[in-house]
Image (tube, rainbow, N blue to C red; front, side, top):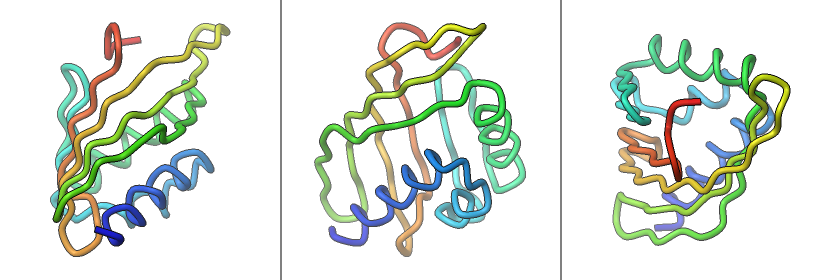
Length: 116
């Protein structure tokens, strides 16, 4: 379970630092990420998704709490981002599956709408 928590912490840290290389290192090569109506698979699609979000929305995440068991974790997070010059804060629920200490799949729910 410690590996799962460490991997999630590393993911959030890389995300907040906008370190795309470190962020992608935390995923398996065939990882799936689902947010709202968007589904991406694999390293290239993940890079496009996160690079666009980091550049356009300037998001940051805070982990509020985590429940982990085996290779899975459920996390409540707070996301702060800027869209059209306005700062927004959202409650996020993320459900993660890990393989070999890296994220293999994630499904993210944003309170309200996942589309900005």
